[in-house]
Length: 153
Image (cartoon, rainbow, N blue to C red):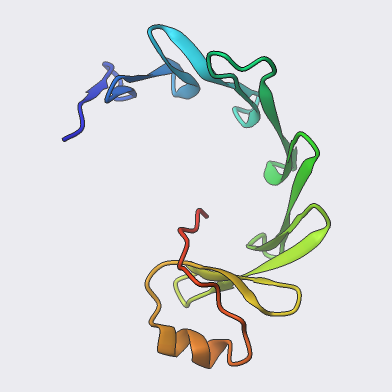
C-alpha cells in the first residue's frame, strides 16, 4: 500500500518516499531528501517550458524543452529527438511527427486514443481495451504489435 502525503491546499507532497516540490499549484520538481532530481520551469502563462532530469551520479542533465503557439503545445525537444504535435482545424490532436516520421492517432467515439499508426497505416501501439476482433476490423491489413502498450494522451 502506498504512503501519500499532501499539503494544506491539496498538492501531493510525498508518495512512497518520493518528494514533490510545489510553488502554489505548479509542480517544481520531484526528488528525495529535499533534493529534486527532476525540475520543471514554466512561462508567465503557467505552461511548462522545460523539464530537467538529473539523478544523483549523472554527469549531464537531460533537458526537455516544450514549445507553444497561441497556448497550444506544438512540440518538444529532448537532445536530438524532436516531437511535433499535429492538430486539426478545430484544435483536436490527431497525431505527431517524431524525428521526421509521422504517426496518427486512431480514436473511438469518446475521442479516446485506441491505437497509434505509422504513415503506412500499420499499428505501432495499441491502447486501452478494444477487443482484438474490433481492431482487426478497423485495421484489416495492419501489422499489429506483439503487445499492447499503455498510451498517454
